[in-house]
Each structure stands twice: as structure tokens, then as C-alpha cells.
Image 1 (tube, rainbow over the protein chains, first blue to last red):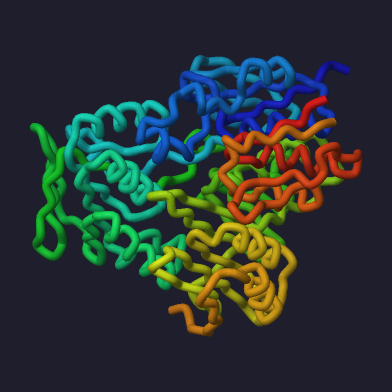
Image 2 (image 1 turned 60 degrees about the vertical axis):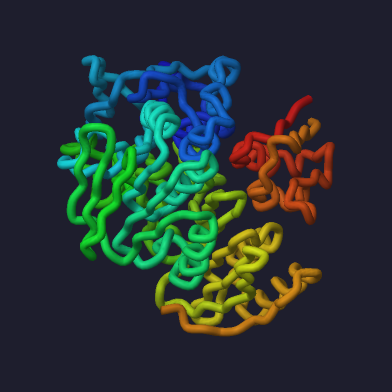
Length: 416
Length: 63
């Protein structure tokens, strides 16, 4: 019998972890890691933070050093995009014309930044997804005295914080009424708005922009309320979409990500997906979800790799999603799967100490948490969500963890 | 097998504690603490998860 071959498509965090998962589970066949970008896999979270601020360079971002390539015995094909998957004959086609047969494949092609075509080629208008984007943006910020962020999500807020740390005038524009609203929920997002204002960011929220003009030495935005913002450059951070275009015609279900079952299997024999591109059924929360955060990509990559290797121990992938964002030395964290109609229990909210903690519950069980500078207590919250703890017990546990922290009063409010 | 923790890299995300609660914890300053420096076979799989899931790549398993 010839040696088995695993293809990992996407030299991303999830892709690298898939390779590790395959080997951890004893896969002794050939592994080929395919990446569309012209270099080895790198870590993305620092791109909008330490890398932009200049305290971290490219070598610090390596996810798969050469020593690991050898230790894991993986063949790397960087700088060549996958262009198609044929699950019947079990092949992946590459942009250079190669067609690679596989026994198992893990799809981990991640996201593509959303960038409206009318803005894509405007001078002075940037987006941030790749290392190249980050290097161009870092240089542009270095020459600028002001920047406009279009989009108040995690990425926009992180870039805002990085730019403030180097002394730029920063304006953030979004149609939503508070920063990071979708991730944090309205109570924590309103709290976060205060922190950004304290740090000197001009927040233009609740009305989008109607025009963005580039060219010359500056960009100019016209806001829906009639106001204008001028800046040396603009960064568009309005989210990203799953990179599934290459899978058109493969027969896979691709509505908002590669659809997978609770074991990360995408349907056809031997095909799995992991990371930001994968939409899977999470039995812990009883819903299909797609998560665009580091920890899930890491866990899911290894899970999918092990599953692809036939590891019978890997039955269902049921994580408690966790995300963090560091801005101005403030740590924002979310865990679980809070929904707008869950009950919200405020554990604390102290603008003076920049601390916030809230738990979300559904039918009496903790299903989510949002924290700002919550440190160790937030870890407790993740565990409480994992255990499906009753909200009353959870609040008691948070209080114990918080001893020594003043102003602890639990109050119930409806999260609307 | 020995666990090496680089506190200069550690950012206190807590993923190690989540992956291997019997082996890691966070101290009051929010930095990771190794509870069992020489983990037994029972702990090794969880420690490997902790190493892989550390966003700061602050943990090594050697020996």
C-alpha cells in the first residue's frame, strides 16, 4: 500500500495546527502544506497591535519555524494558491497547474478582508489582513499625523490604539453606536466607548460615511450626519469574509464558510475544515457557528488534524469560544456564545479602574462572559461556561475570585 | 518531560490553564504559573494542548 497523503490548504494558524494534529494522532504519511501567500505561516494578532506600533518584527511572527518543518516532516508549498477541490477523484488543483491527489484534506484558507471596490484603489486608503498590508500600513502611519478608521470592530479599535500610542490624531467612524458592539454587547461596548474617548480618540459613531475621497496627500470622509473628517490616511476595517471562492463547484456547502458537522468534517470522504473559514455545529451551544479568533483556530486546527488522521478520540469539537483584544494596555475578553436576548448580570463596571465584568445566562445557565481587565476572574468565567454552571453559583464564584476587588455588587439588567 | 515557561513572553491569556488546569494557573498579576513542572503521562496530552494554544508561544515541553 502506498503512503497516504494529507493536504492542508491554507498556511494559516489553523493550517499549522492541523499539521501538528495529524502528527500528534500518529499520521505517518506525507503532509503537504499549501499557502497562497509567498512566505511561511505567521501570527496575525500582532499585525494590528505590536507590529504596527513597531515593537515586534517579522521574525517574531513565525508560526512554523524551519526546525518544526523538519520535525513534523511536512512539505511546504508557499506562494501558490489552491484553485479547486474535486472531492470525487480527491484532488486539489493549484494555481501553478499542479493537481495534487489526497487521502485526507484539511481546508484552512481563512478570511479575506472586506474592501468595497470603490475604495480599493484609492490612494491613502488601506486595509489590514496580510503581513504585506501591515508593512505598508506601518510605513504609512509612520509618515502620518492623523488617521481615519472606518469600522469600530476589534481590528479598527486595535489600530486606533496603536496609532494613539505613537501620537497620531485618530478618528473612528462606524454606523454602530458603540465600539466593538457586536463582540462585546451594548453594555460593555458603551463602557469601551468611554475608554477610547479618554485615550483621545474621536468617535464618530451611530452614522456611517457617505463619501470617502482619496488622492493627493490626504483622505476626506463625509459623514451621514453632514460632518467631515480629514486625515492623512484611512484604514478600512469592516470585517472579512471566508475565503471559499476557490471551492466553487466542489459541491461543498459554502454559505458563510465551509459547512462542517460537529467533528469538523465537511461531507465528502476525508475532507475537513478548520479555523475562520469553517462553519461547524457546536453541540455545546446547539448551533452552527463560525468563529474568527485565534484560540478557536488553534484548537480547531489540531482537532481537524487529529480527526483527519482517524483519531477515534476526537468525536465532537465543542469549545467555549474565547477572544481577546489588547488596546492601550487594556484587555478586552469575550467567551462563550452570548446572544442579545440572554440575561446579562453585571458583576462590576468601574470606569475609574477600567474594569468590567458581565455574565450572560440563558434558562439559568451561564453561556457567555465579557470582561475588561478582568484578569484571572475571566478564566473562571470560561470554566463556568464550559461547565454550564447555574448563574447564581457562577456569580458566587466570581465574587470569591474577586475578593480584594472593591465595589463588587451583582445587579441584574436585561441586555437589550 | 519538563515544562519551560517564558514569563517575559507570557501575556496571561490563560489558554494554558484552560487546556491543562492541573498543571497551570495564573497568579494575581495575571502571569502563568506552573503547578507541576515534571508532568506525568496523564498530563502530557493536556500540556501539549497548552503549548500549542498559547498565543504568546511562552511554553515549551522539553526532555
